[in-house]
Image 1 (cartoon, rainbow, N blue to C red):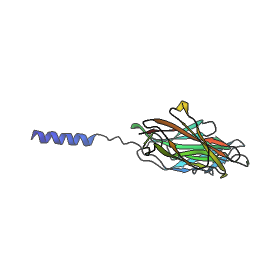
Image 2: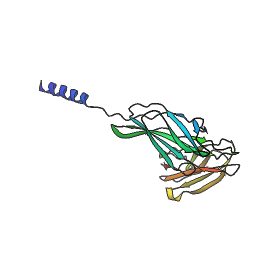
Image 3: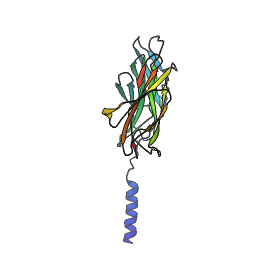
Image 4: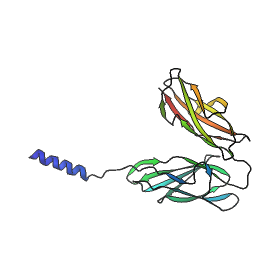
Length: 224
C-alpha cells in the first residue's frame, strides 16, 4: 500500500512540474531573399526605412532582428515583441538578415534562415554580387571523404545583374590561415583532396564581369 501511495505521489509531482519548452525558429517573409528590397520607404538620398516581417513562432516571448551590412559587416539589432518591425538603413547596399526567437523561460534560442537583399540606392548601372551561400559541407559538419580522399564542395552565387564571372576558393586549417587555394572557378562546385581527421575553414569570393566582388561567410567542417 505504501509503495502504491509513493508511486501516485511521484506521478502527481512529476506532472505538476512546469515543462520548459525551447522556442521555435521563424520563417522569414519580407524582404524577399536574393532580390531588390520592395518593402522600403525612401527617407533621403542616403537612407531608407525597411519593413521586416516573419511568421510567429511557438514558445517565443520576443524576437531579435539582426541585419548585417555586407560591405562593412556591421550589424544592426532590434528587439520586437511582434512579427514585424522597421529599421532605417543605408541605401545602395547588400544586406543579410535573420531573426532570433527568444523565451523568458530558457536561455536557449532559435535562429531562422539567413536571407539577403539589396536596398536600392540612387540610379546605378551595376550591382555588387550577393555573398555566396555555402551549401556543402554545412557549417561545423563532419564529412566522409571518398576512397581518393576527396570531397565535392558546393555553393550558390547570385547577382541582380546576372553577370557573375568566376569564384575564388579560400581554405585553411584555422580562421587565421585561410589562403587562396583555387581561383577563376567557373562552376559552383569543386572537388578537393583533403587530409583525414582535420578541421578545415573555407569561404568563397564572388566576382562579376565588372570587377565587383563579395565574400561569403566562413564555414568550418571536419573530415573523418
